[in-house]
Image (cartoon, rainbow, N blue to C red; front, top):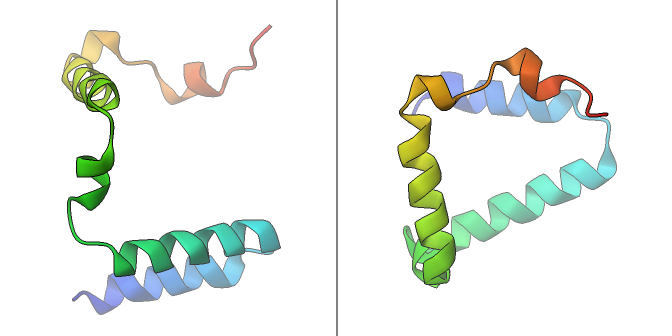
Length: 76
């Protein structure tokens, strides 16, 4: 296990001042620690799995991707 990775996660957590975000992070990590690998995927409905697989496939085509700036641009 990478101590650098753990240290960077600890640092990020230390910098968070939003209590709701910290609670969400705690709940997420707690759930992930308890769950078996692959369990979340197994529990997904088939249509959601297909949507994720399609998005993954589409992301491999760089022409279908948007830049960070495009993503963050305010919608009108």
